[in-house]
Length: 184
Image (tube, rainbow, N blue to C red; front, top):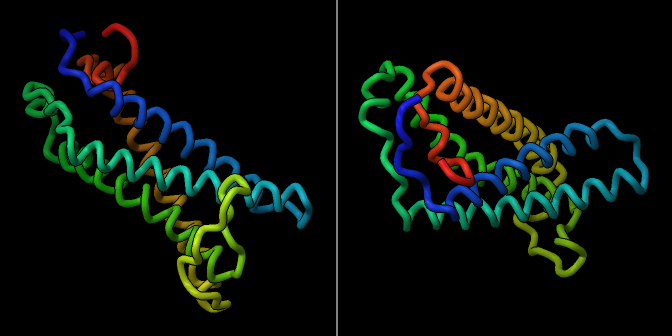
């Protein structure tokens, strides 16, 4: 294992962890609730799902603003040079895809909910404005957009985790420590 590399700021690591846990949890709840029969429990889960989606959208915005105003540590030159071109491409494309889908998935869900005529009332405190007008045709279009964007996000999360595990257990290059909490 190589010496430790420059680490991400604690705020970047915190936002990474919060968003990661929230995405995995929300995806699991989304899969579970989709096949439930109509019931008060299903309605509760759908409302919770929407609240969590708004929270993820907010966290994504905070994370993007942090990223734009705080340059992350560069990928160590020795590691980047050791990576084949396709891995460097996958590294950058996966990160870009994650950021795009951090916004696309909740915005598609919001559009679907608005088009279907179901308001989003985060934590029961206030109603968000409709993202789009009520339209059955638009709701029918946005439902699979939200679903498949969520599946795409889940696939990229799995790819991201697989890459991190490769660096930890195959390459043993210490790269994963840049995002770890505690002493590195």
